[in-house]
Every structure is written in structure tokens, then in C-alpha cells.
Length: 326
Image (cartoon, rainbow, N blue to C red):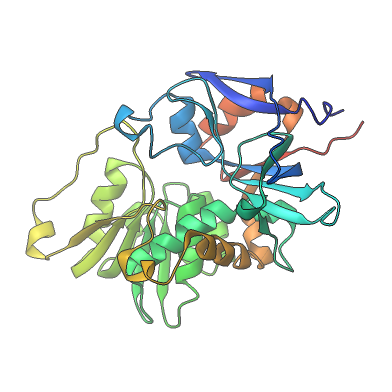
């Protein structure tokens, strides 16, 4: 059973590798709307860096989630993929998405809530933040019809980049991953698949999303002359070797960073953050995207299972369920 509305529970990262459930107080400001959480999604890459205490001090401010409580490194209430139903009269039962941490019930200003589009179920809408990131990466990559595209790393973000790229007319999109079991996922999303040693070269665009030095080296090796390599990984406080000798200069390759915190300059005059997230939600109508939900855990078990979920290389988007049987 849930706690009363006045004392909802939330997941906190209390220390390196330590998660716990804490009670929290709701903001009862006049502009706040109360939402009963149905699902949240675990963004494995970023949340693992937070869980392990690997957010660099220089990025403490930029890495804050919109409704984070606490300060890096610890303790923090972190997360940004919540789906729930509004509890307020006049909007009772409306389904919404919010960039909110893992919490059973929450309040936030109405202006930061996003209504779920028709055809997007609550359980799939937890992918919205990842889809927003993927959309930004596609913009940064400047993909065009007919391009040969290689995406290194078939996690959630890499898979979604491949999914979007494959829907540009004439593109040839190959997802590349060490796990051969991801081939089925790639095919469901409309992409080819290859293990690193068999990945096709001479790509017009390479997106690197594996957060590894080996993956970045592979990205450089697959890029055709004057191709764009988009670095979509985030390494936290780590350092990564980049192979800038050999073919990198001879082929005049371009290495471009992509980060969802900024809209690309050629889009920024017309696109707001709200418009971008609304578009990301609308792109989740395809049932094929359910393949990215790799597991589900009841919120009551989340603290004890959180570390295992984050460290499991098979985790894609792990969904947290808040409605439980009595």
C-alpha cells in the first residue's frame, strides 16, 4: 500500500552504491499540480554515473535534474522520466509526463507537465527523455536522405537514434554492439546489425553511444572521408583515449559532441525545450519501441534492486511500477 499523499516516498542515492527509500514533503504552492505516479524509467547510463559518484565537480550544476533534491555527489534524489495521472479537480485522471525523479506522488508547476499524445501508453512514455536525447543527436548529426549511418552502442539512446535515422528516406542504418543478442532489437527498429569486427565502413555519419574508448576508436575507423562522428556518450569524471592519428586527419573527419542540455544552433531560433520534448513524446506511438523496455520492478523493491539494475549490461530502459497489488 502507498503512503498517504502528505508523505510520499522517493528513491534517494545516499552514497556511492547505496540507494534508499525516504519520505518526502510535497510542495503545496498555488501553482503546483499533484500527480500520482504510474511509472518511472531508469536511464541506466546517467543514473549509474550518479549512483557511483562519478559526476565531476565541474558539472555539478549542469547535471542537476529538473526536480533533483540534494546536491552532488550525495545524497541526491535523481531521475527524469516520470509518468502519472493528475489528481486535481478538472483534470482528474489526465495522463502526463514530467522530468521528475523516482517518487510515488509528486507536485510540480502545471507548465512543466506534458500531456501524453493519443496513442502513447503510459508504460511506453517513460522513454520520452531518451527519445528527446536521440532527437537532439539526429539534429547534431545533420543526417540526410541516403546517408550511410553507423551507430556504435545499442543501448536505449543508440537504438533510438538508429530508429529515427532509419525513417529518413534512403538511409542505410547499422547498429553496432558487442552483444550479438541486440540483433533482434535492431531489426525490430528497422536497422541492420553488426558486431564490431563486421561493421560496414565508409559511413557518411557515425554516432558513438557506447561510452567506451574502443567504441570511439571503432567510430573513427568506420567514418568515410570528411564524415561526421557524433559523440553522444557521457563519461562523467572519466578520461577517454581518442585515436586522432592515422586516418583522422588524412580523412578530415569531424568529431562533434552532442548534449541534450543544448538545442543545436541551427534549430535554436525556432525550437524551445518544450517543443522538443512534445515532439519526442509524439514519436513514441510505435509499438515496436516497447522492445526497449527490458524489465520492470515495483517501487517497493527499487532500493534493493537499483544497483543490480544499473550494473546489468542487458538493461535497456528498466521501468519502475508504482501501482501494486494490495
